[in-house]
Length: 149
View 1: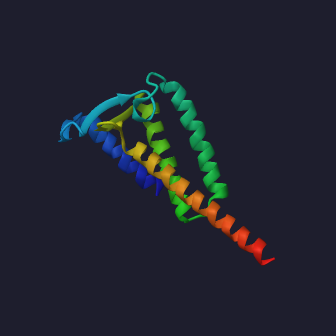
View 2: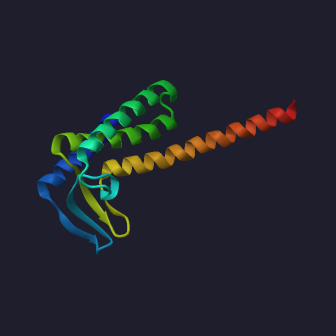
View 3: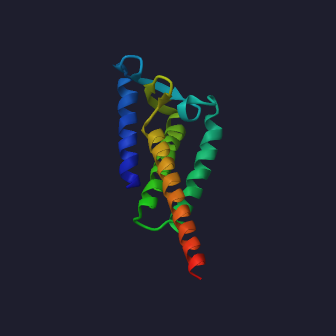
């Protein structure tokens, strides 16, 4: 799954770099626009590419180890964490190869981002939901066991 996500991400970024779009999709609310981002998600903290290479590399390694050791294989939770990892690796590839992250989706009030950012955000939201659901389910089981005793 991770390889497919990375191929799609890098293909879209390749096309974005090649064509450098500047297209209004829905007026100024949604635009396709080529931007070279040396910061983080939504262009925050620009000019720190090397720092973010190191941070991204370390986080990706730790997340990969965590997924391999502590997350059930072929589970929905694994897919959620894999989205986050794929997004991190996708942007890390950009930083290392290009010296910046290719962003291309611009939304009014949100900022500019790319598919890797979407992977990360959707993955994190899903991880939070899954982990909270497990936490509350486990708490309910513990409460029921305590009452039954």
